[in-house]
Image (cartoon, rainbow, N blue to C red):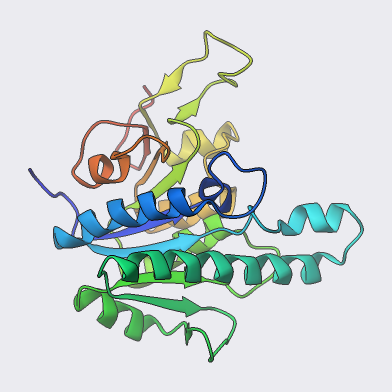
Length: 242
């Protein structure tokens, strides 16, 4: 089994941790994700993770309900730390050394984000989970994933979601919707496709970091993605629209 990547950045949405729940964290889903990450780490792939917080609190919705946008975003950042700590515990329960680093200092529960320390953890075979987004309001965890990937020298961003790729229209509304196998950064930006936000796409484009969007709910898909199996939709500079 070939391993095309030495260092990866896995982006998990907060909603992915809910499973079939309406809110919060499904322990069974978290354990399943942890097991797949453990398999990847055991292959020698240096693994960093950025996790969202939408299963607990979403800043944009808070702002829409009348909250100050910055305050709402900070609350959302704190929610991501809760998810990061939950995933860390699940990984360590099965023997995977894991560190949580946060962009907002929380010394009692996690390390502060320090780029060189994060890279050193990865080099030692530890999984590193980045929490609290970028530490700045108005930026999404998708943008954080692209930023951290560039900072640590990740070779790819894996965006694990609830869908199996990028479509030209909503597949739930249009049975004839076409799933793209590959896309260019420019096509995604020009057509405003909902892959990641435009800032994240631009960061990946500027640093030539490919993005693979795939369905996390299919057991084994993280391992398939890491080993180069053709799943989901790949976005990159050398890709064609197909």
